[in-house]
Image (cartoon, rainbow, N blue to C red; front, side):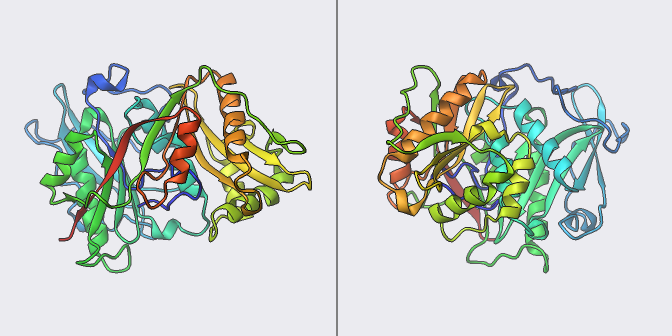
Length: 388
C-alpha cells in the first residue's frame, strides 16, 4: 500500500480502489468521450485503430508491461479497445515524476463524489512525506491521448492503490494484472504465500468488491484494523478554544520547516518525515500554507498541527495529518488546531471536510476526537487479500 500517512488521521486509504458508475460522480461523464476540465495535455498520443470487435484487454500480461516499474525503461504498451462509439488505443506507461502525480490527482478530482476515494490531498501527502522511496513504488498510468483513464500504485510488501475512470471500469482488470506481474517479479515488490497481495476498498463499494473477488481476492477478518471515513459540513463550526499563552496560526514557510517537522516526528515517532521531505510536501499541489495550521507554545515550540488539503473544485478538504507533540498531549490542543484549520478551510469556499482515523479498538482515540468536532462515520475500509 502507499506509505502509511503519519498522523491522527490516516488519510490515504492504503490500497484503495474506486470505480463509480457514470451517474454517481456528480457530473455527466460520457463513456465515449470523457473530458475533465483541467486535465493536462501534451502526453503521448494514441491513434485509434484495431479491430472493432476487440475489448480492452491484453495490455498488462506482457513482459514489457510487467517491467514498467520504478527503475525500468519508460516503455509503453498499447491497448486497443472499443467504447460504444469508437475504437480506441490506450497506452500504459510508467510514472515519470511529479507531473504524473498531478495527472493522477486530476483524474481523482474529476471523478470525486462524497463516497469517492481517494482525495487529491492524500495522494500528495503519501507520495511526498518520505524521500528516496520512488524506487520501491512501481506506478503505472493508462492514458488515451492526453487523458489519464486509470492508474495503479504498488508498494511493499504487495499493496495496491488504484483508481479507474468511471467510463472505463474494465481497466481495473488491467491494473490488477499489471500489479500481479510486478509482485511476482524478483527485484521489484516481493510477496510470499503468507502475505500475498492486498487491496483496500470502502465497504460500500460493492461493485469493486465483486471485481476483486473475480480476481481471487477475499475480505480479511472482521476484527482486523481498519479506517473510518468521517465527514462533516462546515456550517456551525464551534470556535477554537486556545489555552492562554498559546497561539493558533498557520505555517509561515521556510522559517517554520524545522519546527513543523519536529512536532510531527514527536507526535508519530518513529517517523521518516524529514525537513527535506516536508519541503517536498510544501511544494506539492494542492498544499496551501494558510491551511497548514499549528499551535505555538509559549516557549516558541510548535505544539500541535492540522494540515488540510483543499479540493476547490469539489469544495471538500481532507485533514491529513493531525498530531500533537508528546509534551503537550491532553491539553485540548488537537481539538483547537483542528477547529482553527476548519474555519480557515471554510473561508476558502469549501463546504465540507473528511478525515480517516482508525476505527478498530486498537487505536480509538483519534475517532473520538473527530466525533467531538462534529464528524460522523459514513463508511469504513475492508482489506482484500489474494494469496496466490
